[in-house]
Length: 162
Image (cartoon, rainbow, N blue to C red):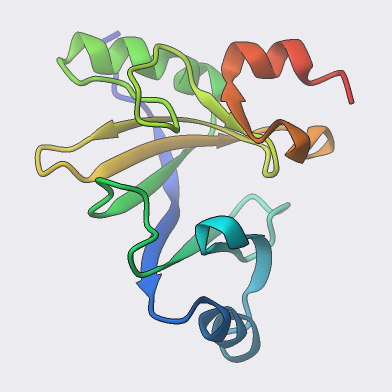
């Protein structure tokens, strides 16, 4: 349990924007990113940087000013290659005095799964209260947008059902 989690690379970062639709057009038409997912009710959008199916991938999230999740000063997600490392991360963080968090900001000893990607993630805060995320992409053939964001155990119980 003393071995640090092996970070594969920077997975995502987030920006606030003054006009979501204008920024979506900018990042698609000017920068050339592919829109991955838009959440109109949260005034947010996510873009793939590179191919979501390649071994090198990243994501940009944009949020309209004043709609970014409460308490999120800065958000950085690190991609973890091995799902077993991600599954052990909550125990390792807890052992170091760091509270592991779910997608919803509550203490959790298991990852949250974002069904539309699909990806499993565990969150925690740095000393300046920035939100840090460890994320592992899951099998692309099991996307479950209908589930939204669920716990790892809920994902395992629901992933074969449609």
